[in-house]
Structure formats: structure tokens, C-alpha cells
Amino acid sequence: MASMITTTKLMGLLQNPVPTSCKILRKDLPSVASRRKSTSTVFLYRPSGIQTLPVELLTHIFVLGASSDDPYVESPFLLRPDRAYSSPPSSNFQLLLTHVCHQWREVGLRIPALWATLHFRDKVHIPRAEEYLSRCTQSSSSTLNILIDSIAAADHIPGVTLHTDEVNTIFRLITPHVRRWRALHLKICDNSCKALARQYLSTCGPAPNLETLQLYHFEDYRTTQNLYLATYRPPVVVFDNSLPRLTNVSLIGVNLPWEKSPYLKGLRNLELALHPENIRPTYQLWSEILAQSPDLETLCLHYSGPKSMGLDEEPAWPSVQQVVSLSKLQALTLTDLDPDYISGLLERLRIPNIRQLTLDLPDQDFSSFLEVLTKSATAVHNSSGELNVNSSLQHLRAIAVYALECDSESWTRFLKSASNVQLLEVDFSRLPRKLWRAFMDGLSSSSLDSQGIISPLLPELQVLKVRGLSREQLYKGPSCGYRETALQYISSISWIAGKNEGWKENGVEADVVDGETRASGAREIEVSFEILDQEDDEVDEVGGELVDELEENAE
Image 1: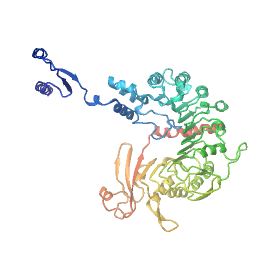
Image 2: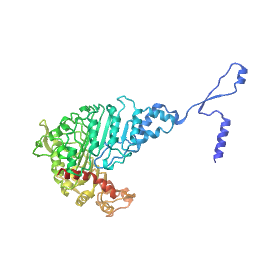
Image 3: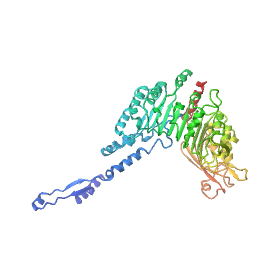
Image 4: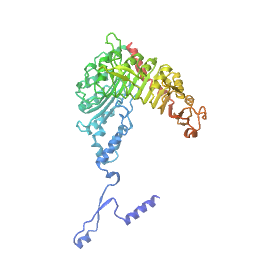
């Protein structure tokens, strides 16, 4: 076959000796003699296919390719307090495309946007960053996204991982470019690296383009003495307090000089995590940060927030009539907090337009907190004395519950208050079993509200994601039918919520689901559940272990 194809191509060339991808230049000379002497034809090669793309279009394609797995799609923060960071596949996209051919390399090296992400997780990333910086222009329009992920001395592998020497080298490399920083994600795990970070961030000068600041410090203190050494020194002023474009702040185990940080305003995303009581801001400073950030969209509190109410050395929280309004808040996450604490906190917040709520609240009874959360109309006065109505759940579209202790009645009232929720994710392995039964009972029946109107549980629910349940428990769900598409670890079911006497008790045939035998008003709910292995369970417990260690050392 190969020889036949070759022969065919050769015959075509003999019949048409001028390829279509070439341009013919013929020089017609005036004399016949000259025409006889000039018997050759000059061919100039014209590129075809992708080689014909203009540089502008090729540049656009490269930029889109580098951003196809943008790590900032879901959140401006790369580091999480309960899991390790893993870089997306596109982290080496720039290197791959510049090794395809000479033309692509020349184009790629002239695109500063391709070399704007500096992730330091191993020592080999340092020389790569030096190359990246050499390819970027020095103009302020070329900004940098920087991640430094170091480890503790006990886990350090010389020549491989990052510790004091490597962190010092990295800061010496990037601080001359501080005016071009767009995002800084810094994770340190012991006091020696913390001292270096304090030194460089307090002397590097202003960062006029910095939009995202994430500082993460947590270590195995082991003793109260080590905890004291890590927290007794007052925090330092960073970036000369000049961060005019800062909108995203995440502080995990790190505190700032709260009263000397004027840049904590105009925020859109705020995350506070793993703060012992003594390094938290006062309620007054906390309320000022929120009041000066009216466009705040996400708020995450993980064992953190303002200093607790009622401490002898701290002023009391204001009355519940003095609330802070966050009308643009879209997402709220609450993790490892006490029931009375978050109840008092939410009573002083007005969040009428929240769309996503995440709860991870184990080990204590949070029934009273759910009652506060589900108040459908609470009359409160704002700082101007105006009367407001706080309806915080009416716009909810998604709820994720990873841990929760409460009674069945509070659980049911909470779900009924969130009547517009379309996605519900629950880890029932960390909830009382009775809450699963209450949820199933609520889906199977519809009760009458105060006006005599049928009020089903979660009438807009479309997707349910559950963990910690067996297939048998899912199949014996509400009085409904199901169909299953099973994979190795993931299965999806479609439930028809609503009773039809013609259906089987524990399942129906596919034609019943797809046909017209549905009960009047029945609805279909897509359900997915996951069977976890032991490693997944260990990952989920990381955040809880950090909080337990903080509490034990504080005591």
C-alpha cells in the first residue's frame, strides 16, 4: 500500500510539476537567445496549514491554551487549610508549546502572559522561575501570580523540597518584581521560614498590583511552649500598608496587625482560618472590615472570626439590633465553630441574597444555630436605625453539609426554609442517621403550610450528592422509582419524588420512568453517591485535627 501511494504521488508530480503550495516566478527575457539559456523555473516555498496563521492569532491560541485549566476558576485562593495543593495540568503548557517547533518557540517567548505564573513547590522550580522572569517584560502591565509551598524542617529533603535556604533564594528572586505581583500564595510550616517571610514582606515595599494575598502558616507545635513562641511576637506591617488593588484576602493561621492594616477594605473574598482566640481581631475591627467591604461576595470562617463575646479583657459585642449588611454576599462557609458563637455572629449580619451555604460543624448540637439561620423574617435595625427584614435563605441555590449535629425538627425546618435550593450535597457519615430518615420522609410526603398550601421539602431540588450511605439505603429512599448507571466507585440514580400506585415499592422499569406513568406533579432528582476508601476519610479529617491541636495547645 505504501509503494502504491508513493507511485501515485510521483505520477501526480510528473503531470503537475508545480505544487499548489508554491508560487512560480517566471522571468521573460526579451531575446530568444536569453530565453533558450534560461530553462529553469524558480520556485519559492509558501507555508501551508497551521504555519500560515498570523502571529496575533497564534498568540491568542497560546494564551487560551495556558488558561484552559485556570486554577482560579473556582476560587481566588489556591491553598486550603484541610488539603494539599496540587497544580493543574496546564502548569507546564508553556514549556510544551515552545518545544514544538522554532516558530512556536519564537512566538511563545515573546508572550509575557505565558510566563506570569511562578509556582515554587520543589527546588527545581527555582531555575525555571528565573527563566520565566527573564522572558517577562518589566512593564507594570505584565503581572505575576506566585505560589510558594514550603514544608517543615522534619519533612525537608535537601535538594528536593523547599525550606529556609530555598525560601530565602525565592524571596531574593521575586522581591525585585514586587510591583508586578498580582497574587501571592505563601505556605510556611515552621518558625524559621516564618521569620524569613516576616523579614521580606515587611521590607519589600508597596505592591500596587496585588489583588490576592493568601498567607498560610500552620505547624505541629507539639508543646504549648512552641505555640507561645510562634504567636507571642506581634505581627508586622506588610507591603508598607500600600495595597490599593487588594480585593481577596485569605489568612490561615496568620494574623495581621488588625488595627494597622488600612488595606482591609473593599474586599470581595475573605477567608479567615485556624486562629486561636488571642490573635483574632476584636468585634469592632471585624465589623469595620465588613462594613468597608460592601461588595463582599464570599466569606469563609474556619475556626476563626472576631474575638469571642463576653471575655473579660474584650468589650462586649453590640446588640443584635446593630447589624452589618452584606447585601452582595453570595457564598458563606462555616467550619469548626461553636453553636453560640456563630448564632451570635449571624444575628448581627444581614445576608439576604446568599446563594451558596457550606457547613462543616461537628461534635456539638447546632439545633439552636439552625433555628437562627431559618428565621424567615427577622426585623432588625441597621446602623442608620432603619428597619430591615433579614431573609437569608430565600435565594439559596446550593447547600453543602459535610458535618452537622442537630435534631430532626431543626434539620427539617432548615431544609424547608431553603425552598429554592437546586443542589444539595451531604456527607451522611458525619451526620446523625436520623437526619437521613427525616430527609427521606420529607421527600416522600408533602405537608400543608400555615395557609393550607402543599409545602413539599426542597421543591426545586434537581441534584443530590451524598456520601456515607450504602446503595441499599439509597434504593430504599422515598416512595419512588430509580434507575442506575453504575461505575466502579460512582453510581447515579434518578429518583421520581412522588407516589404512583402502579410503581414497584423499591424500583421501577425504565419505561415507567421515561413514559407517561409519572404521578401528577412528580419531579426527577439526579442523585450521585460515592463510596470512600480509607485515604479519603483521612483527608477529610485533616482540618478537624488541626483545630483539635489548636484547642489542646491553647488550653
